[in-house]
Length: 89
Image 1 (tube, rainbow, N blue to C red):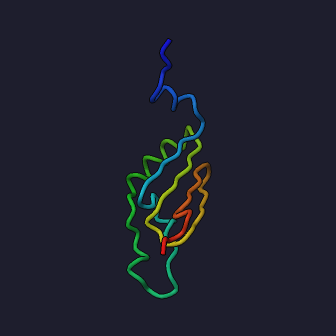
Image 2 (cartoon, helix red, strand yellow):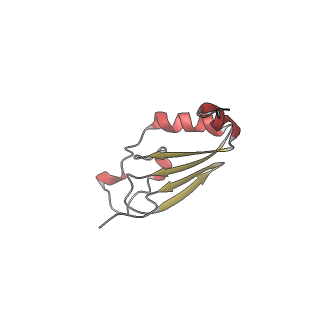
């Protein structure tokens, strides 16, 4: 008998992992002590909004880049790992 896959599997899980390049929320940007163009939010607010709607039903883990230092944030049941390996030199 064939196994069901795809969305059916997601419905059975309590956790979803997103892997995206940019940061999903402006909170992921911590401003420098000196004014810098790198402090600008260059993520996608729309992606963040979509993730928040899914977070009503699931625990969310986000691995994202576009940030030059390691950063961990938690917003309710959303855990965000920005550049978990740091910047490659």
